[in-house]
Each structure stands twice: as structure tokens, then as C-alpha cells.
Image (cartoon, rainbow, N blue to C red):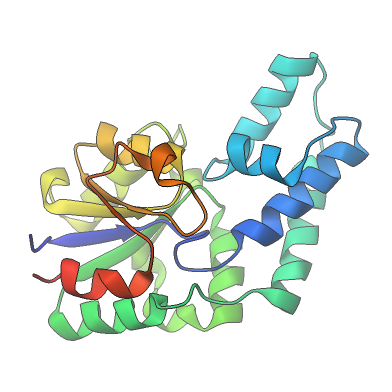
Length: 215
């Protein structure tokens, strides 16, 4: 099927940030007395907005995270991005193909606008995404798995939900896309296929998307 709009998640789909950010998140939570492994972080927080971290810690422990938690965490993440962040292999080729074939695309991420832009500048993806193509959970009241972000992106891009496909790598993101009435392709590079079972289609290599999205 040829879609009118391709909506990309950012972390783990366009930029290879999930290993970096989840190791740092696990380490920081552990420092604060909330023992968290890398695997725990991937399971509980991958694909989520920051409020989910606060909500789960409060629910599980009855303790609130420090007021400056987000600022400290993002400072560590951005510093690591500047050293180590790379685009996901194959992502540039997919964007080149979509642009050449005139298929509209955008990014809709649980991350903040600042996080998206820092990552895109470091990886060179900023050439593909101007301000009109970037949407963040900051723009809506509820993050994934609520459908609000994807519906907001589709509305701003002028495309009906049923004509959109979402490219996601997290269970929360897949749930959000399904709730929005959109097709969703689940990227299994980091997430077991069983956890993305609700997806319309699964794929393990970004290169596979080139033909699937323009057929």
C-alpha cells in the first residue's frame, strides 16, 4: 500500500539513541535509590515520555523523583549524544527514497523538541526535518500509548489517520498507532517481535522499508 504520510518515531528508529539513553536512565535511577537495570529501563520506559518515569517510580515506591531530574538526565544524555550518537543504519536511505518519490513524512517522538533537534544535528538528519515535520509529546496532553501525538501529527500534516503509517520500535508506540487508527510497522532491531505483535507488519532492517512504503 502507498501511504500519504509516513510518521517516524525518532529514538531507535531514526537515531540510535535507545542504548545510550536507557543505560544512562538506569544508572541515574539506581544512583537515586531506585535500582534499575538496562533491561528494566528498556522494558518499562522505551518509547515513553518522561512523565512515565516519574509516574512509575511514584507508583512503585511512593517517592517522587527530584525536581531537577529531567534537567540532569537530559544534560547527561545530550553530552553522550555529542560523543556517540549515530543515525540508525539505513534510515538515511529510506528518507532519500521517500523524498525522491514525493511521499510525505514527519517525526513524532516522545522526546522533547530539544532532544529531537540535538540528535538530528549530531547525526545530520536535520537536513531532512524542518520545524514543520517535527512533533513531540510536548505538543499534546498525553504521550504514548495514547494516540494523541500521532493524531496531532497527521492533523498538522493534513492527512487522514487511515492514510498514515507509523514506523515504531516500542510496544507503547505500536499501541498508540493502533489506537490512532493507523497502520504501524514494527522495527524489531532492539525489541523482540513478540512485544510488537499488534503491528501491521514487522521488519528487522531499515532497508526493507524502501520498497514497502512506496509500493
